[in-house]
Length: 201
Image (cartoon, rainbow, N blue to C red; front, side, top):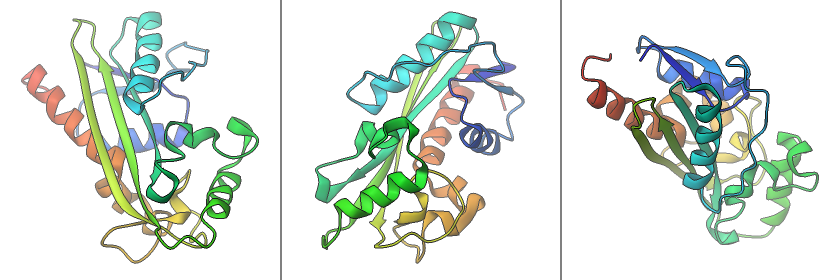
């Protein structure tokens, strides 16, 4: 496999994927770079369902190996919210900025002492020979009471991973690419892809 399409136009996700798979001899394209100028309705009730919907839409349009990730934050005290609605949780939905999203989350947790949470990433990859690869990863931690740092994206400024003393945004991409939910899911994906392809490095 020499080409892999990421079913997303998120530049930060594309950069993260390229960094994590940098030791593989594969060209990684965004869905726009692959000529897919459409949005996929994320109508699934789980991360796995949404990852499949995104991968299938782009795969059907291109016939090329396609990988999709659906991920989000699940907060214990909010019964797993925002969950699959992480990207559109705040008032304003998809149009809300990252800051608006995490500040809205903090407002929901005002006065709440149980700050336990986890990021979850579900990956689905569809290959031209009909093979389907599905993996999942998670990163457990706590929701801070106020944002720290400007790095990362999404809820990174308010999420402190277990075993660390600051937010994911402060820790930076080098650490994040080793411990994040997406890193764990992608590591499993890379291992499975190598197993299937045999000689792929």
